[in-house]
Image 1 (tube, rainbow, N blue to C red):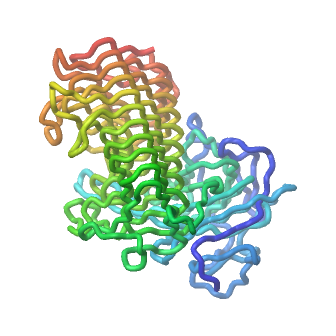
Image 2: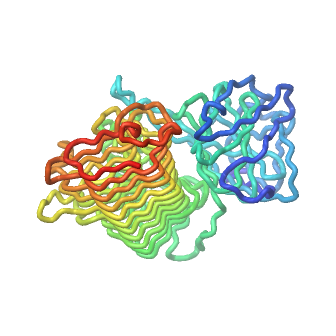
Image 3: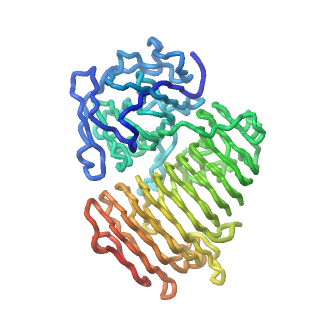
Length: 576
């Protein structure tokens, strides 16, 4: 058996043209006597795609079964684990008519404990037969309010590069399928199901969550990427090239120890390239400008996590393990990598400028494990990301700790946000705390965002989109448009308040001004009201416009319809 980290699966088919991550016509699954139904997955018809399942199709071998006949060609490299590829006659096939074959590459982790064998098996077909896709693991957690504790789960993900047209087959191996959701619903995925096997087609790079029976913790995150175009020369002296495999303080010469924490430092003009299948057990600290962190590999900090996901349970050796930290740097690119279970922020930015974060994927399960948090930073672009966090998914602050100054010119677009405990967007909590030298956060733009989950047991921390403005901050000139919110566990749509949070703010905020919300939809049953309110007669929320707010398919004509309460010390709050 050949050892490798990545599964290279070549030859796929291309037809019907590229469309936005959607499946076209009904796809049947022959080889089983029961009929195969076809379902359409979208916002308006959630109930239509939730259907009862039948018995599982076909027998799949266990990972310990060595009696199979491998269907591997010389162009496909099978990972070290699992030790099987199901024979053709044991997996029901579909008929594909195509004159073209594309290509696919899927990435496997370096060790057995990083696989997830428990819930799903995944196969892909790009025109020349079914091939196995490694299923990887990451830790997530649900905060149980009644018990005041985190309940951890091992979630799953697959990481695939492809071109052409790819059909994915997902087999549930631990649970009978009763309902299926493929989110974001805005992708309008059509799928075919036969018992515990689901198939659908992907024609364009996208990130998805595959969920059965309403389970959002033991779900499957699906990362479908374009092939890489920026693979650097590994012999370049400015390139840190980490090949597929495990890289830690014991075997990687680039890792230094900051006290008891392993850190890889990136200095001026350096590139960190994480090859698909590379797992780096260290934080990445960017202390230079004109730098890049690119590839298909994983910054893996799960080793630093506490079993119960609580901050106070962390080992003193691994406090505040950020995935990536930018410090006073300019012109930085992060592209294509995955951050697995940082104990603090997945990405932290301190006094940075001209930072682009593209196609980043994150997981977290810990107290204060935010997604992307930056302070006193400007000209920031976040796009094509899937941020799953255990605290705020994206937080924009002004001054905090040693960082001083405004934050401005942020562009967040085409991104999925998922917060298991706090806000998906939080702006304005931290600032100068100086009434004679107030910080400003301005020119903030969010467009084409899917919010899949928001959960907080505390009303003071509600708001999928929150402006929790303290520390004398001024927040102005912000636009949120084309944002789709799914049914969340516990929160509200909006929270715009000039306030004082005694846990963080010695002084209240100063002003929220000129904020636009346009084309915002929510589909769900959470009844919590949004709040808009100032602090005093000279600390206002003003000039806030809501336009085309749609809740469960009905456009809100009044604040009552939009479930928004207008509190004192506000001015010119409108809805249309």
